[in-house]
Image 1 (spheres, rainbow, N blue to C red):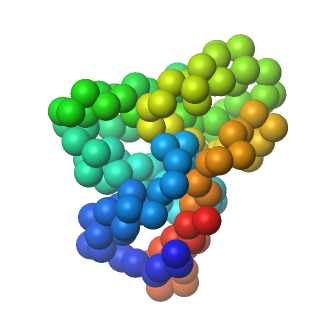
Image 2: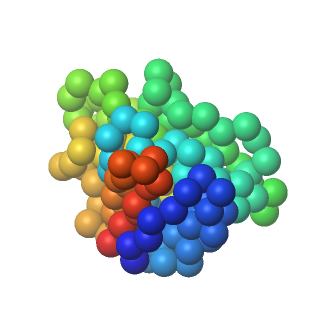
Length: 135
């Protein structure tokens, strides 16, 4: 799926993203400011997370619980310097948990990612819209 959208379209884009997801492990690629965290916040909302969500830039992972009892892990590997840091924090256990795993900056831990992950690429367009590509 490829779609260009504005911020006001985000709820629909998030719903379509969840409908298209073939795995609970979703990788978010895109340059700084492309809307990765904003999309993840809307996805969490649609999954029933009522907590305030934010990017775990310094803690590497935030854990959220939905009103239905589902768990969502939100990773941000922007500041990671070596894959061993993710390995040491038990990333494989998170992936094997069956919980939703949303990962920003997955290119930093490329060798640790499950093959069955959903890949999302976000692009900033000149008119300040975004284009999402889901593979």
